[in-house]
Image (cartoon, rainbow, N blue to C red):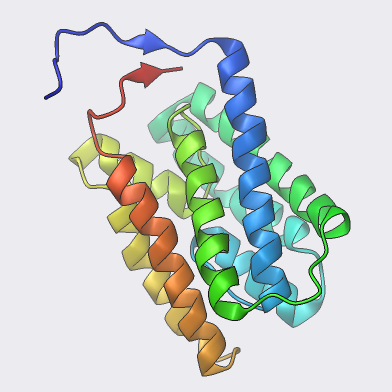
Length: 205
């Protein structure tokens, strides 16, 4: 049982930096698995992956560009500190995702493995960022805002929106690719929903 009288334990700057680096590296590795298997995820990352497949431009370029309009909501609703952290995290994922595809190569990646492990890596990375008042922009900002304002679990909000994005992907990708992508999205969002509940984690940045 949580004791509401316990003092909050602020994160130290080095803890925020470590979480930022490791969290974005986890996400970048998950994105690399998805790219190798031609899968999608949800949120702005899913949009960036789809545009990557359609245009040949790198995921990092699209991911950074798509998130630009969402900074207004982040500044207005979540504050400058959160927004700046998010801007840095998005920049790191954009860079790390391009570098990881050069650093790590896979001779063969089974689709089911890529879906589950890619979703798990992205989910754990996002969880680390959430717990240090950082997001990956886009739908993450909206989900965190709704959790903060209304108590809606961020994972469940994002799961619903991600479902709509994956449905739209049916117009561009084979059915089996979308099916595996759904498995990955469920894995990702369950990790967040089960581990990022309001009031459970008292560390603050």
